[in-house]
Each structure stands twice: as C-alpha cells, then as structure tokens.
Image 1 (tube, rainbow, N blue to C red):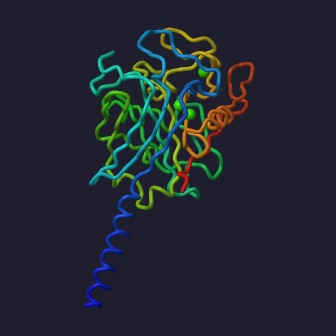
Image 2: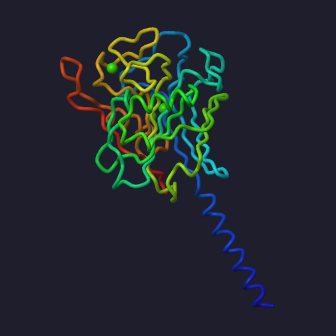
Length: 273
Ligand SMILES: [Ca+2]
Ligand SMILES: [Ca+2]
Ligand SMILES: [Ca+2]
C-alpha cells in the first residue's frame, strides 16, 4: 500500500514537471506607455488616421498553440478596423519581431527601411514581419529588398488579426528553431504600414525632420535615423527606466548629407526569471 502511494506520488510529481515544461512555452514582455517617440524626439504623422497611442507598444507575448505560435502585441489605442483597404482588423501598424535562439550565429544587419543594426552578440536568427498587407505582398517585398543571405530567416505569418487593442499573428511552429523559447532573446520594432514605400524600404513609413500627413517627424530626412517608433528595452517589464534605455539604444548620428555616421544599435531583451 505504502509502495503504491509512493508510486502515485511520483506520478503526480512527473505530471507537475511535464506541466511546467509545457507552460514554459510562453514568453511575455511589457513595454512602458508613452515612449512611442523612437529615440525621444519622434512625432506622429498629422493625418487623423494615426490616432495617439497607435504606435505605442504596451506588451508582447508569444505562446505555443498546437503546431503554431501565437503572437500578441498590445498597443495603446483602439485599432482602426476600417481604414485604407486592409482586411485584417488593423491598418496603420506594422511590427517586426527579432528572435535570437543562438547568439553565436545571429544576423547583426537590420531590415531595409528600419535603419537599425544589432550589437555583436545581439544578432537575430529569425525575423517575423507582422503586416496588414496580404502575405503575398510581404513575401514579394522580402524577395525584392532584403539581402539574399537574410531572406531564408524571415517569417511571414500564416494569419494576422487586429481586435480591440491587440494585434495577433500566427506562425508555423516549425519555422522557429527547436528549444526553450523562454531562454531566447527578443526585440520588437513598431513601425507603420506604408503601402507606397520607397525602393529601399520594406513597406515601412519614413521618419523625416518635420512630420507630414503620412510622415513621422523629429528625425532626419535621410536614412541615418532609426525608422522605428517603439522598441523593447531593459528586461521588458514595462518599468519606467526602459524609456531611457530605449532612447539610448536608438541614439544615432548623421553626416551633413543625411548618410549615417553612427547607426542606432539594438540589443536583445530576455525574460527575467
Ligand atoms: Ca511603449
Ligand atoms: Ca529619416
Ligand atoms: Ca518601448
């Protein structure tokens, strides 16, 4: 009888351990409110479609769901389901997720139009592009504008959806490496969906010196300024200190002709354990 109880107890322990491992297939980050200003100076385009808070990332979660990963992004404004001709419940936002599963082999180059790079040891192994454009268009842009050596490491979701203040995306789990996703590094870049991008920009909206109807302001008319409006920083807990850390990471220097003197250099964020 005592032996049976011991075996029963061990079985319960085993179930708890397996359960914990299954639950660990989820990462969750928060981002401060009100830091949707890139390096600290950026302003929104003036058209009314860009509501205050639309580019203010507040959270990022990724969890395993069957043979998919579901990604959820919180923003600090109710999404515009009906604008332009987008079909998925959001239209002004575009989000880039950089996933680091192996620091030794990550890419330190950014993606065309973002004007960022990653620090040595902070490179990305997979980049997920969450856009309200049809997946076929995103894939065409990747093939046209990204360096050949990076294209295989880009993931375009099989489905995207916006509702309330949450943008969601689903990717095939097999497209990410195997491993403990809670031990990996992440970075998230908030951008804006540009249907008429420049030849050098992958569907991204430009940041200029002065804001315009469809242009962010507070940057530089060249491509020496980071074209991201909000990113993760610190431990990704949403602590106020992460605002300063973001501004430092997105610091940049331009030459007089608008070429880059020092490009904004990002590092990865890891879940605090
Ligand atoms: Ca934010
Ligand atoms: Ca610029
Ligand atoms: Ca931020």
